[in-house]
Image 1 (cartoon, rainbow, N blue to C red):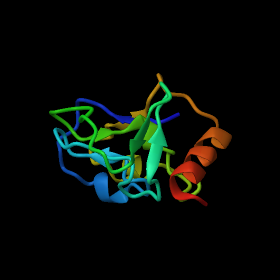
Image 2: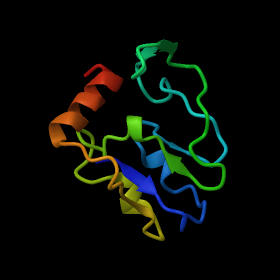
Image 3: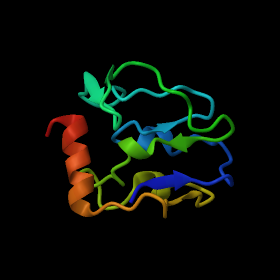
Image 4: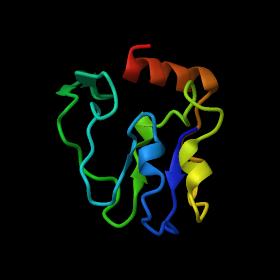
Amino acid sequence: MAIMITDECINCGACEPECPNTAIYEGGIEWTWAGGTTLKEVTLPDGSVIDASEKQEPVSDEFYYIVTEKCTECTGFHEEPQCAAVCPVDCCVDDPDHRESEEELLAKKEFMHGE
């Protein structure tokens, strides 16, 4: 499953530099697939292909957020999600709406990093 940041976030930013996938962004900041990955282009679920450096709409305008499609729970990098490990208010939690197996998380890591 992916990790999500709850609305208890105090916007301290401790989580952002810990993410090996660059999946965490400050509220209101646009995100890209390319950031922190080797991706050059991405095929979206609707079949369209976009440039990986194309800016995407922020998931949240108020709090730091995690891009679910880029979150691997640090699988293949660390033994536990680093955002949750450093969060001082424990607002980086499992996202019950996005459950993935370890194999799916490793495949996502390979997709983004070509490893």
